[in-house]
Image (tube, rainbow, N blue to C red; front, side, top):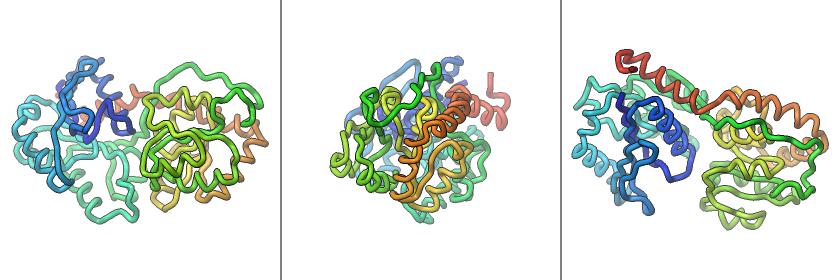
Length: 347
């Protein structure tokens, strides 16, 4: 089977959608399917490349967002052979890229994955309309998180929270303390250094938690974060840093899964009702600490420092759930979605 993925960003860019698309593509190739990825060229990456059998095409785009979509449509028109040769076209968030071609190729199987929200709350009506159009045009969809059904009125065919690499369970030394030298950085924050990741809540809590913290991320609040700890920017593999920490501050699904797989307690925060549902409407909400304000976050950190046995109970249950969330399972979701709609395609 030939699969054409359309996505705004892709490897070697770092991010949740980028990781998701890459890992699913890798596993499809291993199962002898052919995968082509079409993505935007960036300042650093403009040429087409190939990784592990995944063919990558990068669209040169310039100008603002309004003009960009016309450049993308024109590039796809000129390279429509990629669409014609594909058995399945699957968009990652950017369903509107394929809108004109849905009419040109009405019989072509078309699907979409909705990965998240745009970081603006309340959600602009335009964003909801764009998603609804893509949903209606597609033959099926995968939603990353149950909250999307509530906030975007999307009828999800399948739901996922991403995947992880399965390794032997990491060792945990009993009674570890934040003050010991066995950890590289007692606290680690993973995510974009932006307001919508809840960073402001974490920073205010750090005024009362006098521990070192390492920030794995980039964004507008870089300088602000530097007042509290070391900022390393984005890294391709966060696991070594998690394993050298005690607690993990993050509010993103993939980072939460990684922390669970490393048997580290996650502290996630929200600052609006959508992000609250993003965290609480998950099957793993019982095994992470969810807080809204800095005071509550400080109290919970101190509580689990003083009650390591309670911490162990949570992280053990989280690990037992997380270890089943593999990228192989996520890839199987895609195959199930395509097979459900177009059974004759799956070879």
